[in-house]
Figure 1: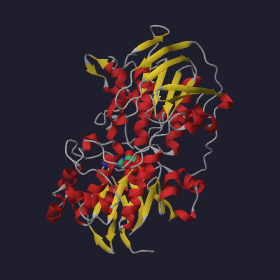
Figure 2 (figure 1 turned 45 degrees about the horizontal axis):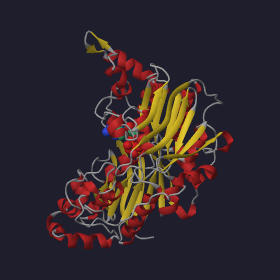
Figure 3 (figure 1 turned 180 degrees about the vertical axis):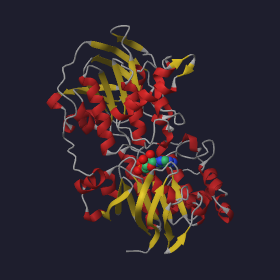
Figure 4 (figure 1 turned 180 degrees about the horizontal axis):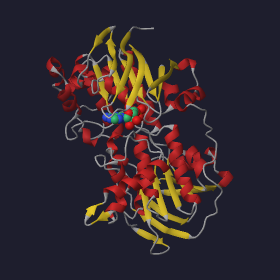
Length: 502
Ligand code: ADP
């Protein structure tokens, strides 16, 4: 095996609030490998990456590069030592071109290597990336913006590339393309470490893996020597059956909302909606399956009351039918990251005028109610008063779901509720949704994860090109029945690395 380029040597990390996020973890990254770092939300993956990148210093243990101890007090130290990192949230200058974004991060003499578009193009070719250097970054699709972030991390001749959950925002086809690029980078002699939850992705694309569990290394090895069930077991600690139904037997009750002949005009980037007929009743889970971009966001906006139909009608069965939402983008629409966990949990009710005493917020009552919700939804947080920002993605999503459930709404509409979550957190979120339907709420789940829809839904509508192409119920809900309805008349879109017109 090639030489280790970087090593974590018996590293522990205790945060200032006393939380032990890593305990005695050793990890070796080799030149020319793609190393997957797996683990549940909160397992310590980001903490580990941030130690390698100099965002945090280890409390105990050290970091070695080519066998020699290095101290990274800040990211600039790590960058100087040839480490690049791609964060989940991009740090791009959107109005600038690809070349300008690369030039901005180049250090010292490297800067002259990004003066012209041709320079940037030559640099990108080394990594097999075919992107228009003159394209304005803000006009590129997300998957290509991510490519620019990756290139930025390589600009200063990095020997180690760290990526924190790069696949969360990507479609399956885009994930394949991402790894095509990562393989090029690996073959240039860079050690690539990728944090992900997705076991299938790791089996398909990584060379080695390390699993973290509650801050400890729980297994490491070659991908060639492992299989799916073993990895899942290392991650969650017990084998989970993917086939099990979530929630009880339900019979749909009274009508809550209905759409008849609803259409929205297509526009750039949207197929619109065409003649949608749909009745939603109490006590049922209605799944909406489809390849992303086939009218799901439009349907969500309509049900949410955020858009009105261009034609057709949308009716609520009575005045007191209310709708609670779990939006797709939890960072921008779902949470206020700087507010505390408790204020996020009770946000809608606080905004609705509850929890006030003598004109001020009643923080004690908010805290008490939040504690009950934290317990019920298994939200792993140090305290109800910590900012939502400090929680892992899975626990942030549990907050958004718990809040929607706490509104006592008759209809709950959720968009991709488990995207980016690990197995256990996804299970917790789906179970919470199923419980709501069991007790009479109408739950609409829009998701591109068919297996999960089959497990939790009473019926599944399939959308394609802004139309409902079919509905399957009960025992007829299967991947073989739904798959063709999703792709009917149109193949799932895949990204291309062709330059986008700027
Ligand atoms: P992962 O990336 O595997 O989801 P993280 O490394 O983000 O996990 O977090 C590990 C644990 O450390 C979590 O329980 C998280 O709440 C906690 N944590 C992360 N950052 C901080 C911080 N700055 N202060 C206190 N606790 C933190």
